[in-house]
Each structure stands twice: as C-alpha cells, then as structure tokens.
Image 1 (spheres, rainbow, N blue to C red):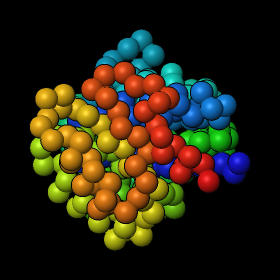
Image 2 (image 1 turned 180 degrees about the vertical axis):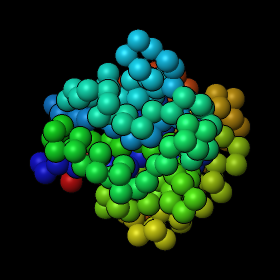
Image 3 (image 1 turned 120 degrees about the horizontal axis):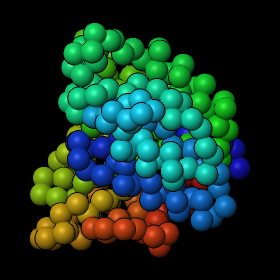
Image 4 (image 1 turned 30 degrees about the vertical axis):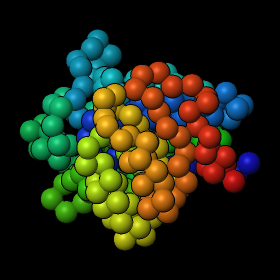
Length: 225
C-alpha cells in the first residue's frame, strides 16, 4: 500500500483524540501495518530529567511500531495546559505553521510508516499564533482529516460544524470516530446513527467507554484504500 498520512482533530478538547489515535494505531499494527504517531504541539507537559514530556505524546510514541525520538514525536512541548498560543507567549516563543510543517515532514521522512497519525491539539481552529491555527497546519501538509467525536449531549452540532469547517478549508474528511466519553448518555446509539447519516464520511469505529480492541474498527478499511 502507499503510505497514508492523516491529521487527527476533535470536536473539542477532551473528546479523546489520543485515546482514539492510540487505539487506531494498535488496530492497524494488528493488521500488520507499520505505524507512526506524531503530536507536533503539546500544551501541558511535565518536567522530567529528559526535558518536558506530554502524556498524550508519550502514549502515541509507545503505540507506534516505528520508533522515533521524543523530540521528533513532539517537537513543540509547552509547560502549561492552556491554549498553545498563550502557553507559547508565556514562554516568549512563537509557533508558526511553516516551522511545524518542516518538523513534521522531517519526521515523516525518517519514520516512513505505512500509516501516520498527526494529532492536533484541542479542536480544529485552535490558534498557533495571532493569525494561524492548527487547521492551517493540516492545509500546509495537504493531508486528509480524521475527526474524533466525543459522544455526549451536544455532539451532533459540534460534529457537523467541525466537518463543515474542515471541508470549507479544503480538506478531505477521511472518516470519523465515535468516542463514547459519557457512559450514561441517553440515546447514544440514536445520536451516532444521526451523525452516520449526516457527516458524509465513513464511520471508522465506535470506541467504548474504556479500553478498545480491534473489533471496535469495522470501518478501518476506508483508510487503507
């Protein structure tokens, strides 16, 4: 198969982008694919003897079959768990799309996996600086998008608005993931069915409230065509 690269975004922060990305990387590996996970920008890092480390980036690094140094998995690590452009300003740094795209392309050249997932931060329009957002990074890299929907009350509007923005920005919505973040949500299956009919993209998988296995990904083939 030709190498596939996808940008993973969410309907909001805290909807389980990393949970979904890790589960997808593991499912792909179970099918014999080589995988790579990248987190270009992470805001909310712990100080360690090796430098700043982000929990989500470490999870992606561990789940991937292609191993790269942490600095390539997460080249921009910011200490505060706040919006990246604000965290960067507090550290007297500026994040730019051209810089990030170059770092990601370097990792892609070295990693050379069958499937690479580039996980964003927060939702689609998270600012990187006063005029650029993470959506601009996906555009600069010219890659399709996977949307993680946190299935909870209000998710239908959030998902449809995000999908609309993705397409308006000229990106292909390659598929979406339903992540059951609210175990007690009423009418959960009906909400997923509504989104399945309305989003106009393959439903890659429905993740349970907890660990997922390969059976959670009935639509995974849509990514590999």
